[in-house]
Amino acid sequence: MRQFRQLPEGELPGAELLEDLQSAWKNGAHDQTAIDTQFLGALLDWAVGEERSVLEIGSGVSTILLGLLAERSGAQIVTIEHSHRAHSIICRQLASLRIRSVEVRYGDLSSEATQCELPNSIGLVSVNAPPEHRGNVLESLRDQLAGDSVILCADADLGDERDRIQQWLYDFPTEIISDHGSYLVLGFARNRIVRMLPS
Image 1 (cartoon, rainbow, N blue to C red):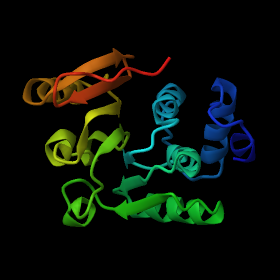
Image 2 (image 1 turned 180 degrees about the horizontal axis):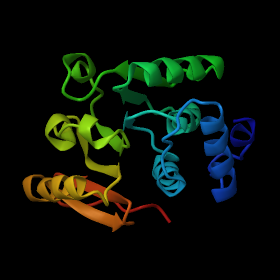
Image 3 (image 1 turned 120 degrees about the vertical axis):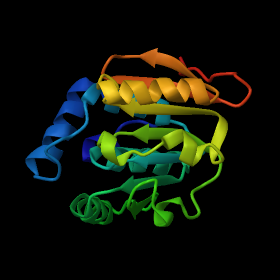
Image 4 (image 1 turned 180 degrees about the vertical axis):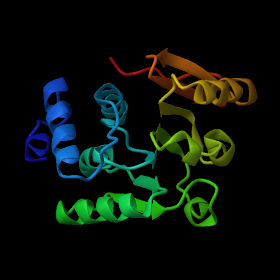
């Protein structure tokens, strides 16, 4: 994590450093099902400079990196983790690294504890929990999402998950910004004006 913290402001880690960070996380027995590094890189691309709230559904090395970015941008990170073990691990890691920009809640989007006092004007959502623990993200969050928020969905190539995303596109003012096979970037736009990735 020292290498990440030493990067100049606004500069993001390359693929090699992301691979190293993922390997260190997995080798530490923190998480044997770590998210794809391409998804992780895309998440950081969207998160850099984001000053509004960021909601993460599922935790891991992404939680640490989002927290480090938020230390610079001032964004609030809320992470929802369904696994008691993973919740304990990520809380210990955040404390050991003295990252105070992340609030981790135990549960899923269907539980009152996690829905209570979710931040308003959420600008970015990362959905990387197992599909069975994601719930109906847009139904649960539509009142909290900013008018031009972005949602990254991992495991989008799974049949049931692709069907759920298609239903979102039908039910909500949501469009696909980019389709990368294993993950999708969606734009939620109350006025149908979708935010694009900064160049």
